[in-house]
Image 1 (cartoon, one colour):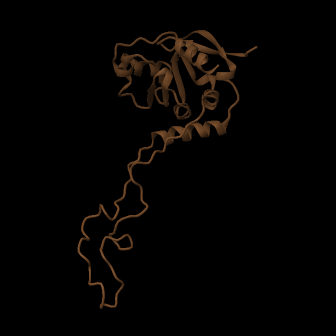
Image 2: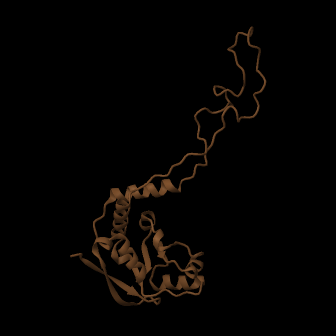
Length: 208
């Protein structure tokens, strides 16, 4: 039988109104640091863009004229000042700007990494809301963080609501993610997690 842990459920005034039983294997299980490390590496690699590019001898400007005659000077023969062995010449094996840095992690390991990250965060740092209603104003989110005493902490807020997205845009130390877009990197880079009861159920269903 799956063990349970209890999470406090808060209203928008920061008051604990009830509790919610959730799977201990997800919100209070063992922490596997290696699989979390792998998940963060995947996240960082997939966010990387191939912006570095060097020019080959064909792309470097100049060098069309032979620098000196072929014979009679005593110097080594040279056909162009843009040869890779010259200063200012082209690069032979430099980056092309087309590299693909993407790597994958299988779903089983990814889910285990998410469970480990949630367990690492700790159930006491998970704030479940019975409901989150805003009109799209920043002051509403600021008031929520103040009510939960999280105004000076790094917070990860989970919501698919467009009004919540609008209201969260200018709040410092706050990261907003959709329910299906939470990463291990986000969970390890925050002090507190705020989400609705429905989102908790969705996470449990996804990771069970």
